[in-house]
Length: 245
Length: 245
DNA sequence: CGCAGGCTTGATTCTAGTCAACTTAGGTGG
DNA sequence: CCACCTAAGTTGACTAGAATCAAGCCTGCG
Image 1 (cartoon, rainbow over the protein chains, first blue to last red):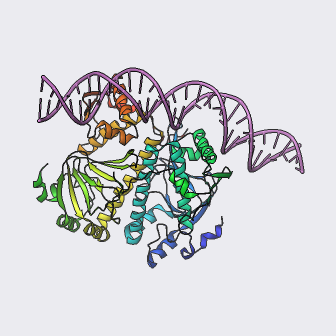
Image 2: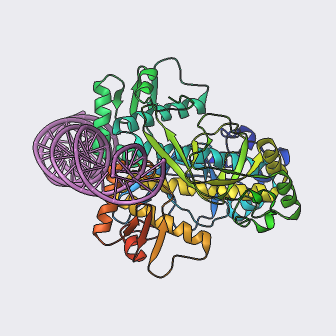
Image 3: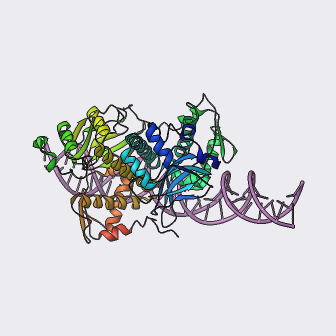
């Protein structure tokens, strides 16, 4: 990643239209631009620790981070996967509720806490965007609870791959292409396991089973090819939506 | 419940200082008061259905509701328990993402959607309160994911009872009293099971086990006495907080 | 008094977890 | 450049915990 980003204008920012600044008008954007600073962290950096003070709020510009909580006995559960345009930190609270760790090299667009909190109270478009993003995250967190509470190991893994493919597609262009999709996993098997509420062995076995069933191919552990996206998605006939029996 | 509530002033409202109106100033409160209408629903009423239009946003004034999603094959997962002061509906989206059902008789303070959305954009204290409540719910939903993903059946049930006791205590006065606590369960065993991502049998067995261990007593299926709250809470030494090894 | 629904309990099965060995890939230093 | 070393991933054997299947038991109500 490139520190010359530090002086780039918001106008060329890759997350300009998806992040907390998306709805900012010209004057609000100027205030954000004056307050922001880019910073890049290597993989493995703890960007926040549960219970510890967090004095910068930020948007992820590039890279991937994980949000998790660890029990005293070592059990760990991830509660979110943070991708470009996602927001880190909670205005109005000085500490982080979760551990946030860079899963790859991560570039953040950072704001000093006090400064950002002031912006939220005085810049209505930023406040509004913040609310919408938080509502979206709330829905995502609740959907996540459904996955963790009621899906089998296989469904969890499939759901993970399908969602990752969708998010990646959404970030780049439109939707998932016709049939075949290739994606790079930003997480190790262990982290995926902690995400899905499984063990590393079970996760690995599910990858193997999907491979055996011809639903995925894995040129390397971190790369997954999905020859028929629809077929894979069919494995989770979750949903209910309006279809009430 | 009492329909005479319908004409009561916000000043005497039991959730005046905890709901979305908590931070409203005098003029905002007048606007809310003009727009609101109380309505009471019997137990079992579907207050919203996943995917269906939801044209009233509301605060729960009294009673208890559940928020859930159901799979095509019948599996169900609750994603939240709605108690007085909690908010139903999402400004900016015309449909509900979940089923919301009255678990007891429920009284709502309702606002017509368009009206409320206008308030959110034009009344900064209401918008701010909305953001804070949404952020709180987001944390709660993420904590819930940790429970569903990594806790054992026993821990889930204990966690449920402990949280319910805490919420009840917080709603009434201060904190949980010295040792003994009595609480009334607003949910059937089946609903608790759907909440905890367990089956009804496993849930029942855990209640029995806790009873045998002397951690709870159950004068009736819906009433739980906790002789030593601290001892019960000790069963889940979850947490990590700042205590990093 | 009998009935129905919700709850509890028992027996058994099955999924995912645990423990352990082995394989592979990637990186380092001789 | 190759050999080794390490960490990550895979696979196997076995176990444990929760689900499933199936009776029975209260409790409140007609």
